[in-house]
Image 1 (spheres, rainbow, N blue to C red):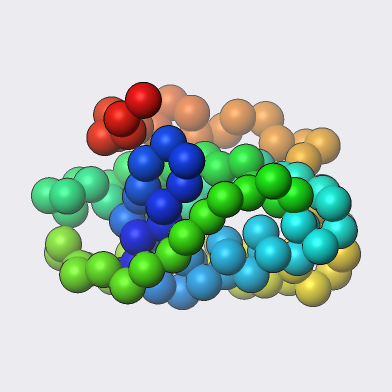
Image 2 (image 1 turned 90 degrees about the vertical axis):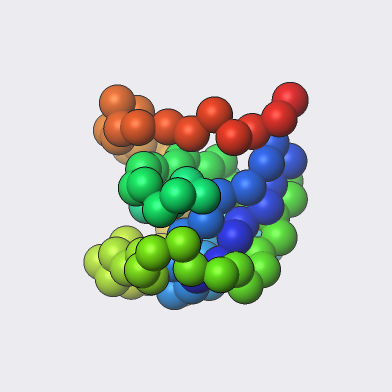
Length: 112
């Protein structure tokens, strides 16, 4: 498991997913592009949820190894998709993202 820190707080997700997010964010940043991504996350008790990130040119993300709260979060198709987008040079999600998943449970762990 890894924790992704962002300006609003942090989320816990699978190691492969976190690495793919960082890789894609780096690729977008070098292109001066942005995209919205949606990944599975877990709260401190292990309850599942989803997080949406705006990543890219001005992303400020830090990713660190974290203790697993239950089991490793794996969504191979999402990891593969993020890595494919990073290599392809396109950010198709920034035009077509519809907000799907916004009705998923969200966590109020962020301190503003």
